[in-house]
Image (cartoon, rainbow, N blue to C red; front, side, top):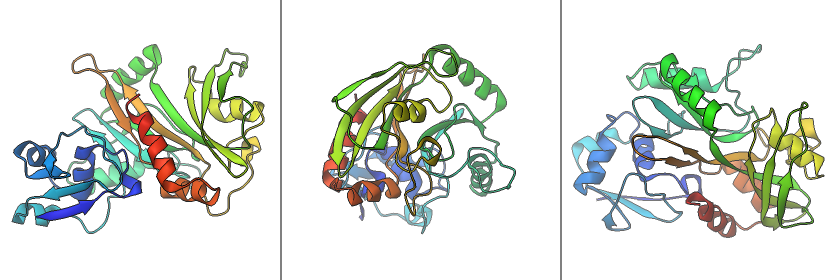
Length: 295
């Protein structure tokens, strides 16, 4: 048997995503086949594809030539949290822009195209929703312009149920609240709740109700608790951090045919390290985060 232990960077990842990350060039159905046949087990028991993994979980695979040949030495450059024939939900690292910039630097769309081509499934990827360069976490990419249009209209009409984590400067006076200050002369609403407190900072659970540009970042600055590392909105600078401490953690995408799809994006190591440096213990952080996964 081959045994793998879940680390913090895979905490809250779906079982199927873990296997596909482990074997990125295997066929699309191979991970599900391993799970369905019982060749892949979780903590010694039968598993299901959408089970959220927890740190220190043990995953075992029945050893075979095909499985051993499929396991990659390195993690893939595109972190895929969910994939079907229409969309990909990727975990964007902090500091990576969505599209090509004037500096022609690395970006998520080009990275995705290169990865899909190298994998032997070439296709251009089209963002359905977007994250700021500095923000990390779950983002939806369609595999065709027509699917991008379909999902884009759906998101525009019904919105996305999204939950963010923000490490902010200071601690708000209340345990939580609602910020409804208009932005760009448009009604804007953001809910927040204190999840954990650190040294001179706090980790907030944040839910944007409207979808204005930089809404979370601007609203948190307005209440005097900007996102750490967000220089544009007075969050200061965090040496060594690629972006700023805002992470799109949970996305719920309605699907009329099969019911809602819930995808959680494991925290980037940079955010885990920053929380630790600010006095938030890793085990406490991960325990608090997993409680949000199924809400």
